[in-house]
Image 1 (tube, one colour):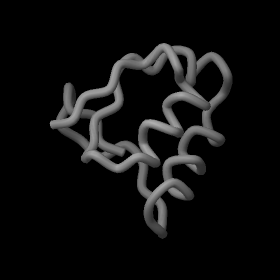
Image 2 (cartoon, helix red, strand yellow; image 1 turned 90 degrees about the vertical axis):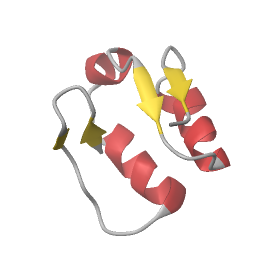
Image 3 (tube, one colour; image 1 turned 180 degrees about the vertical axis):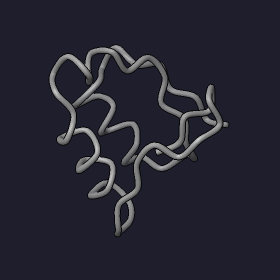
Amino acid sequence: MFDREKNRLVWAHEGCASKVLEAFFEGLTADARAAVEVVSGDNARAIDECIAKYAPQAKRSRR
């Protein structure tokens, strides 16, 4: 995962697609998931599904 505001990598995991994004969100506390404001990525449906499951309050950016 990349922090665009601070321009730095904050988390990386081997693999691809939803399994990696799920691992990221499952590693966060409930409070940390609730604090996610924006999720950016390509048009992969897996991103939308993970946001809905783990951080429904987050806005989706496709840049």
